[in-house]
Image (cartoon, rainbow, N blue to C red):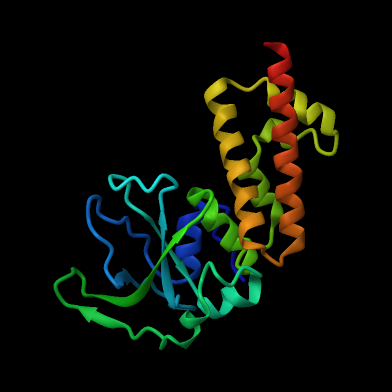
Length: 218
């Protein structure tokens, strides 16, 4: 299967694998039962649903993250069936339709919306990419989870933590929040891809140990 994560961010790559264009949800707009997504060619696979990943604090001013998903593939890949209820498996496949008003005329699909709460919405696309088997190169995930200078010291865990601990505060906080959030998502959704779970556990440990080093220096 072709990889898109090498040149795209996780959500764009996930949308690309599902042959749909990324769409931002309009702010201050109530969720509807369905959500339209534009197809991009060539169409290799279509999603069955779109997850509306709600902000952690349920802030009404923050729009949900619209994440395409295949319900059947999800249930084959995760142990937490409550996140995407079993009832989604009976939904009919989406039927493409043309919107003549777009230039050039484009094909769209209307997908059932599943509102979900996740520990960390931003990392849900990366988790789905690897758990669903769309992406398999864990090096690509590592480049998102750790800066290159830290990865370059692998497998020297102490040196990785040392370099990580010396990052500028905003950069370090981003990696800390992302790794911590992704690990919480892993624990909550229980993906069956053990290799990816081990990777996330490893990178989160590097960041967590680096945080302890930073605290000692204060």
